[in-house]
Amino acid sequence: MAAIPWPVTDQSPNPDIVGSAITVSGLVKQFGRFAALRGVTAEFAAGRFYAILGGNGAGKTTLLRILAGLIQPTRGSVSCFGKSPREMCEELGYMAHPSLLYDEMSGMENLRYFARLYGISDADRCQDAIRAVNLDPALPRPVGQYSQGMRQRMSLARAILHGPRVLLLDEPFSNVDVASATEMTGLLGKMRDAGRTIFVVTHQASLLEAVADEFVWMEAGQIARRSAPTLAGSIAAGSTKGRGAE
Amino acid sequence: MTPSTSSLAAVTLKKDLRLEWRSKDAINAMLFFALLVVVIFSFSFDPTAEESREIAGGLIWVAFLFAAVVALNQTWARELRNDVLDAYRVSPAPPNSLFLAKVLGNFIFVSVLELVMAPLFIVFYNLRALGPSYQLLLVGALGTWALVVNGTFFAAMSLRTRSREVMLPLLLFPISIPAILAMVQATRNILTGEASAQFWIVLLGAYDVVFTIACLLLFETILQAE
Image (cartoon, rainbow over all chains, first blue to last red; front, side, top):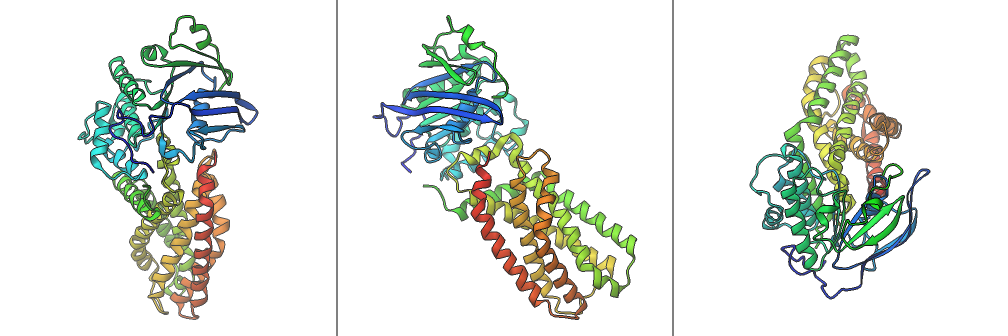
C-alpha cells in the first residue's frame, strides 16, 4: 500500500491522474423482482466532487454500495482506477446512513480500532481525523450517547481516517445542523481540491451548490441527467417519485 | 501495510472483550440460562450419585450448548447494530481475522460459563469422577471449541435471515451431533470410569480440525454474501 497522505486535505497520492476515477458500465442490480439499477453507464473523473441526487428509490444508495464493493451488480461492471472496488478498498472511504460505529465505545476507541484495520497504529492520526470534523478526541462519552449530528461527523472521521482517494458518502448531512453541515462541506471541498474524488448522496442539494462540481440526477434506477451544480431548473428532476427501496 | 491475520484477530478480540465487559449482554444471559437448566434438571430428576454419573455428561453439554447459542447470537448482533459490519467489509482487513476473533471471544465466554457452572453441577448432582478427571479439561476445551467454531460460522450464515435466532439452532444442532455425542460419551466414561474416553477425545479433536479448516475456507464467502 502506498504511504497514506495525511492530513486528508494534503495532495492525493497520484495527483497526476486526470482520467476516470470510476467507470460503470451497464450496471443492473435486481433485488428479487425489483430492479434498483437499470443499466447505469457513466464515467466519473478523478479529483471531482459529485453530488448524487434523486427521489427515494431512485437507486442512489444502491449505486454507492456497488461502488464501495459492498454489493455485487447483477449485470454490468465497475472499475475504480482500473481495478474492482474490492481490489481498491484501501483507497475507498465509505460512510453510510447508519453510523458504522460501535455505540458502546468512545469516538477515539472506535477510530483506533478501525485505523488498525487499515494498518494504521498511530493514535495522532485518529485525533487529527476527529479534529478535522470538529469534534473533541478526548470526549470520553460512548458514541451511543452522541447527538445524531455528532455521530454523523464521527462517521465521516472514520471514512476519511485512512486518507482515501475516493470518498463515498451516503446522506452525510442528515440530522446535522446547518453550521456543521457547512463545515463538513468545506472539509470535503478541501479534500476535492487536494485531488480526491468525492461522491455524496444527498437530498440536501442546496448545501452542495457552492462546492460540488457536478450534480448527477438519478431516476428509476438510471442516471437521468448530469448538470452543473445548480438547483435552478433541476428541481423537477430531483423530486421525481421513486419506485421503492434504494 | 495491512497487518497480519493474527494481529488483526487480536485487535478485534480485544475490542469484543471490551464491548462485552461494558454491556455484559452475552455472559449474563448465558449464566442465567445455564443456572436455570441446572436447577430445573436437579429438581426434576433428583438422581443418586451413581445415576448422576450416567446422565451428567448429557445434561452438562446440553446446558452448555443451549447457553452458548445465546452468546453466539449476541456476537454478530453487535456487528449488525449501526451496520458496523459494513465498515469491516469495506476495509482491507482479512475476513478470517474477524472470524478467528469471534471464535476466540466465544470460546472465552463459554469457558467462563463452564468454569462458573462446573462447581454447581458437582454440588447439585453430587458428582465425583471415577476415571482420570484431568481428561475432563481436554474434553471441555475440545468440546467448547467444536461448539463455538461451528456456532460462530452458522451464526454469521444466518445473519441476514429474517429469524436468525431460530435459524442458528436449526443449522447448528444437526451438524454438532457427532461432537455432542463425543463430548457426552467422553464425559460419561470419565465420570463412571467404566471405559477409556480416548477414542471419543480423538474423535472430538478430529472434528475440531476438520470444521475449523472448513469454516476458515468458507467464511469469506459468508461475509461478502448479500
